[in-house]
Structures are given as C-alpha cells and as structure tokens.
Length: 75
Image (cartoon, rainbow, N blue to C red):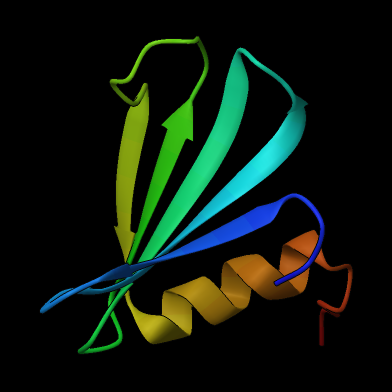
C-alpha cells in the first residue's frame, strides 16, 4: 500500500492496516472485517496492548474519515 501503511490478511476475519505515525510509542491499526465493521486500535505506548479500541460501522467510519481528510462540510 502507501508508505507507512502495512496490510495483513486476517483469514476468516478481513484485513488489518497498521499505520506508522513516525513514533515508536504511537501507532494505529484498523481492522476491516468482512461484514464491513471497522475496529480502530490506538496504541499510545510501545506495549502490544491497545490503549483504546473503537468499533465503527461503515457509515461511522466514513464520517470519521471525512473529518480527518478535511472533506467534511457542515450544512
């Protein structure tokens, strides 16, 4: 994929995208399950355990993506 994004196939589950944020103590992983649900894992330390896990529907994920990509506009 793109530089700093690593994709791993998760058989029977979907795909995991590990996003390198340029710091060893911070990273994000997104698991896109076969049914469309997304799991967002936030790692705020070098630990293998995430600091937070958020489950997002496809619609919720699109809203977050729109805000992060600065394409969100209020009516």
